[in-house]
Image (cartoon, rainbow over all chains, first blue to last red; front, side, top):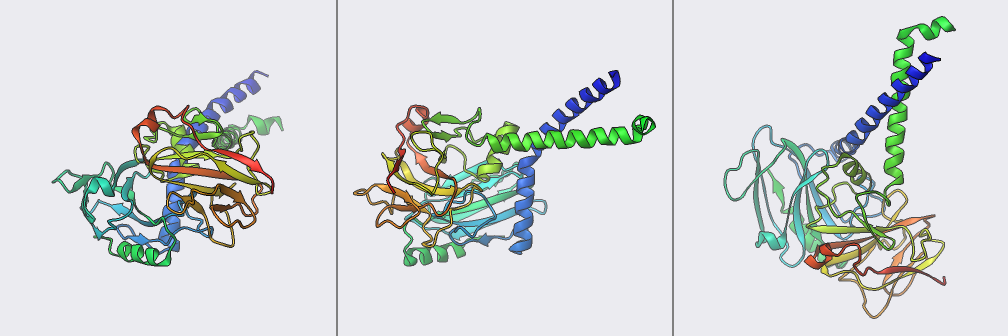
Length: 170
Length: 191
């Protein structure tokens, strides 16, 4: 009887440990699965940028996408040095650049009004070099550029898509 | 049989496996059941909003990863989520709804419907949002599975769905007042 009580206590303590471990791992697992899907299904390597169309009901990569946005994404890796992000952005709509840690924390976001220019020119680095450098707290992470397409007029969409294509990461 | 149980080589791995499944099951169930009611969310009527997205707490981070991975920091955008109408009934495409009231002030707002799986609600017209730009202010916003002329948000064939009100660059007053802020209500109407 004593032994059974002991085993129950052990299971309770270990279950609590696994509960904490699972909670801690969920963001990393979600990120890992997303990374796997993008790398394998979309054939996108680290430090490459992938431009997506406006999300629809067919998209199954990320939950709760905003159907008003054109998304460009990249998994960055700074282990071999800094990366440069350049492009011509719209000057008449909301857009933003956001960076995330592998545990999905959004550690940086800046929008068009804060950039004050439609010429995107950023350096992402592990060290703080100059004004246009963003110091990343992690070697590997994730970037999303959002461009708002409020009107679903094909002309608008095509215009914003052509600007989206100008965004390069190298 | 007694000998078998006495064998530590069997008992220890068994305890670990059982504990793993219990711990993981409770964690996942708890995250899935607390997408609307969690200690981090601020409730305002039937809307909830997660105001602090710095996500230093493991549980909140897991929750956001489950329902809104890669969401923006709260200083950039607020995400109001509801799965109930003004009477507390689960939103379902069996019924029509009208959104009454205006969203809080900000640079951009939008309403979007998501199914139980948190993906966009399927519909033939590929219409997924009503936003500050395509909204016709002379007409109410109607959520329905059947086509409407203006301000129509298709609810497809969802047993239950969620509605998200996104607010980008809200004015400062919105942050100070999240619990009592006047938010639109979702009213069930005749189909």
